[in-house]
Length: 299
Image 1 (cartoon, rainbow, N blue to C red):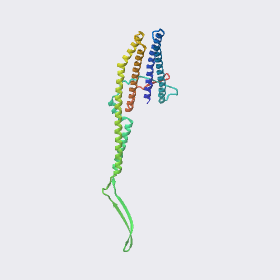
Image 2: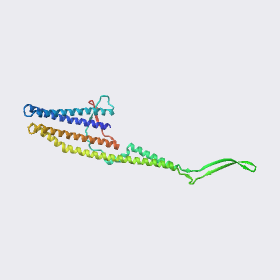
Image 3: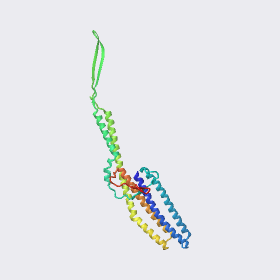
Image 4: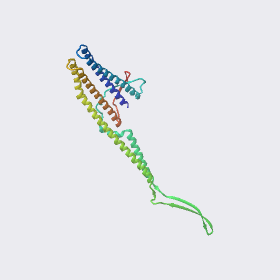
């Protein structure tokens, strides 16, 4: 949970950096258009469009800053930081190379505490069944009767000792054995179904990470370089009078959306890795912990 909150803070920080860069570009374009309007080279409409676009970018940035404050406050709760301390996340969103394979996670799945508990529960149920099976003993009933009977010379006291032996001789304890066998079967079914569901969850999360990593690679390698090149060319074309402000704003929006898509895919991929390792009970071992800064001080 701490790592998920860390990733959300880091994601918002990178979103703000992206929006800040976008705002700077829009501000430069708006300033340039305003000069052209004053010189009579562009219409007042173009100047108003530039101002509106600038204010929209500022509102977007301020909204993200508000979300970041909330995310940092939520992040500070499990860290037990002093009141008013808002930590900053330091790191990269990229998942990077995974230090394990799907087979490794699947093999180590039964080392999780929940499966060890189910294993011990199954062992206890099997021991109970063995105990009930051992509780078979001869079902012999012994009786003692004392009475008086009439005789020729008076009344005699008669004592009778009886032994009753049913067929079969041994008490089978079928009720106790049946209950113990049912309990053992239920525990085995619970363990098998829990293990099956856990493996299915691991497989789904593993595939999700692969899809998201492919999406990140495509955006970074094929989409963003072209968009950034278009942005550079459009700025030059605007200053040369070859295009108007609408074309520049369109290119800027495409660049912003491309960067947002990249951060979103990176965030989803990182969160999927957190869920994968939590589902597998993967030990971090000597891996470095995420670093944070609280009010400028490294924590």
